[in-house]
Image (cartoon, rainbow, N blue to C red; front, side, top):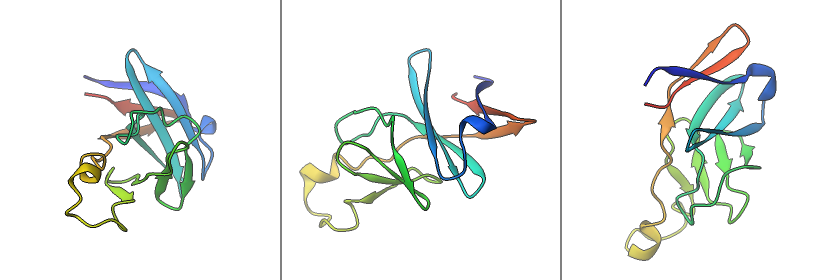
Length: 114
């Protein structure tokens, strides 16, 4: 799938997020340190939308139960960093968020959802 325009750069200020839907795909855009990242927009914990998610440095914080994900890799940071790896029920909820390639073209944010 080719890159698609999802927002304007000004729609995602530094330190903020923006939730968008492209057809049936929810996407969360996050601007960390002037670089925009795109991730799948539902939290794997309980499939809640990440609309309203906040950034703590490079960590995306789910507004429902505060599961946190690295915006560059999509890997869960919290609660994975505090729970033992041998707790299988929790491990099932710690799937990473899918990340998408982003290009900024002039003042537009383009994302490859393929």
